[in-house]
Image: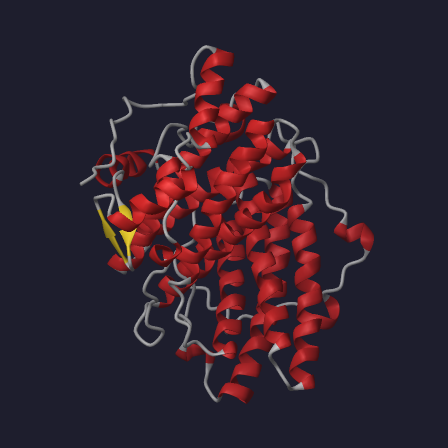
Length: 399
């Protein structure tokens, strides 16, 4: 059975407001919850945060009072949805535990999108980024073992391996080499637009999270590692947001945002293992159907187009959180030495990359390398979680 969100009826907007009791949802149990339930929660929080931010930016550039009022009405409900979703996370989790969960999202969500993306250029963008998030997970897992004396398998539950990807110290590139070519809004497949919006939103959430939580640590190595990886997340947001066609109208973007929320809530409703969380996904889907209907009306009135001109007539196959171990190992074996040059990819450390590396590192080992050395000294060996085979050797070729 196909599901067309443009034809489904949702909960009327005037019935979507929830009181404090309804907003006060019970968090998941960190010891018993499926790790991928936590990943779905983190993903939807990032999606809701992007929806709220986009609506604010749209309102600041819109002259029509009626449109600004409509955006405000929907945005308030989106803000309630974001609170419900994010408050599903347990208060018992430390910032570092949440960080490791964020990186598990980045790894398995981006890997899934890369596998499903039909456009070769966009696929390469996701393959490139996921090898860096994979390495971030490894660095944070070692920090976790060193300062909290716990192991990351408690969080990722062996669904995601923890081992080196493209070395984090090699992620620092000149900003111009983080800008990609955008898809063509007239020619791109609807699923490609949803993929780009989803990964951009997830990475943006991670960037914002690290910017805020990094200085809350007392341990110097933790503060430094969050600072380093936080800068790389800035690169990743630039990388992914540049994939979106800047020629899309505000109305087109609004419809894409609301359609993507319907797509993801529907996907997670279909795949969720926790009945209480599944009920929230279903409720929010029915709310988002109305938000999409409103966006479609605004597009027809102010953009003179039908929403069917920019989105798919039915939802694609559900987004699925699942292990991507074999896929990631294949990427490590074949693309570990990639970097970027302009809007493309190369397998050598070109002159601009080398100059940037010299400037940012200043002749010293970066925090991402120090944390591994420090954990070896404290724990006797670095932390890895390899569930199959051995890790391939890697190196970055130079001139």
